[in-house]
Length: 405
Image 1 (cartoon, rainbow, N blue to C red):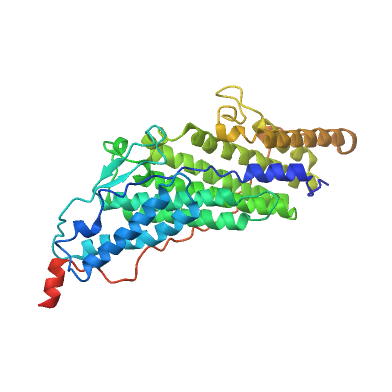
Image 2 (image 1 turned 90 degrees about the vertical axis):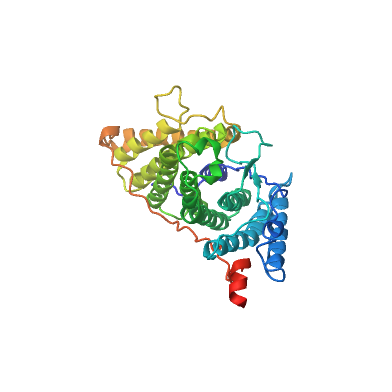
């Protein structure tokens, strides 16, 4: 039987690797150029609408301050976004509901940098008058902040994986709201994609839903590894779902947002390629242990051989193995943990082969005859993001006059 109790060093390395969450930067905004009270001063009623707009201006300024600090607090950004997004949505819905065209006395010029376009200068602000642009940057900021909160909460020595999963599922709900409720109103085309922030791309938003779904699912793998009581066959199924979600993320990026994929940080791209390969190896490792425990020794050795092959460093563009680790600032920091995992798989394989050659005498199953990886077991349901205010629509001049007559 293969022991389910892991040495502390191996357990911690496994937990560190399987819960890697890439910390993404946040966009930065400017307070100047976007004053709701001034822009709506001639169309709003003085007592009501101007006061509402002044309040929304204050909430926006607080949000922009939080997201643009040199040392950003992800929790503060997330909370500030929750205050601002419903108010911004209230304006958008009120404009939509107005029976007459709403004319502004001055332009609303929303200015934002991109967190996801690594080819742009950190000080390169794009200016748009489209309210959906502002909403996209607000919601993207919140979701990215929650990803960073999750990354900061992970500790191999403490079981805080449920907390991280909750944050990641919440981030997925924000990206989903952005992709379904707002960005379809501001269509991206092949002609205008290059001039837009990735945060305003429906395809990018859907790819990031897949990303955080994969990361949240990984926390359930970690909980099982931490507890050391979950059957390895179950861990294999959980790992397959993580692998599938990461692969779907890359597929969505390529199919629906290829122009933006070409502009992301190479470190982030290396992470996206590394994680599904790592989880494929982990799925084979867990499945191998499950077969060994069932005394299916020849299959177990064949499966573990697959894990060993995948965990090796890729030497060229066509061979199997993990790639991009040496070149990646983020991934290279975890080389010690990866080496511990590689040694563990190699040592287990040597031990199993020795036992098989002296005790069991099972024929080792070749790669072509191995059973496929099992169907995944999904544990993640994205949390719906509630951004709709219960407050009544804002009355503009024409609507206010009609109501009073």
